[in-house]
Image (cartoon, rainbow, N blue to C red; front, side, top):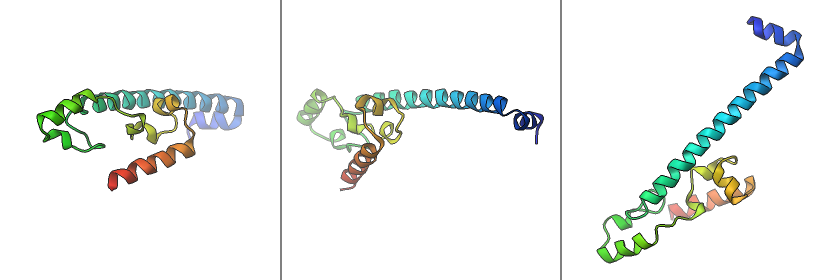
Length: 117
């Protein structure tokens, strides 16, 4: 056992303060990573809306010019398309949708199930 661990064992207040500090740092790091995922996911969903993506399929990639024109007009993606962001209950996407954990799990199940069929 290191000296810091020994000090923490003898001083519960110091150990608690240290653990709370570590928890706070980890929470901030998680928030930062989730924001990065959210931003990258936004870019991916916007950039890939014309040709297709792994969530919607690639029908637009080989489509005729008429279909491509329709796809260009419908560049909006739905909040439910955020498969990666919605997989974390603390992500910005979940906060934006104001969903509870059970609703998220149900939504993810529906999205994944619909993609398989």
